[in-house]
Length: 81
Image (tube, rainbow, N blue to C red; front, top):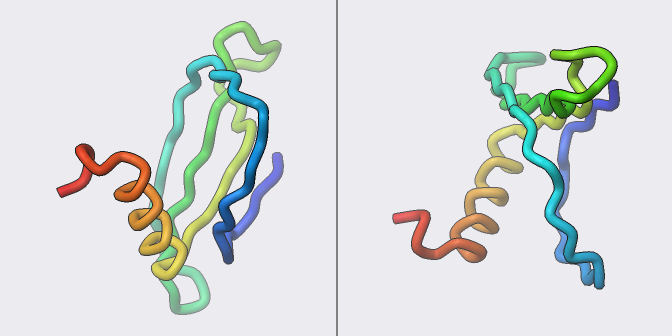
């Protein structure tokens, strides 16, 4: 399983416009080294060999969460008040 603490978001260009298959994303919050973290875990599709196995994990601290909220608000203005 790969895990990463996101420290920076950067807009990138790409010609790829493929919609991926749906998966479940679990989340949890915890405190480590005195800072609060949000961890998002994606689970593989239902046709995977090992069901309920975490595929990827990403972590956000408060700064990363604020930046992601800003990106979401810009991308989906009707979704955020």
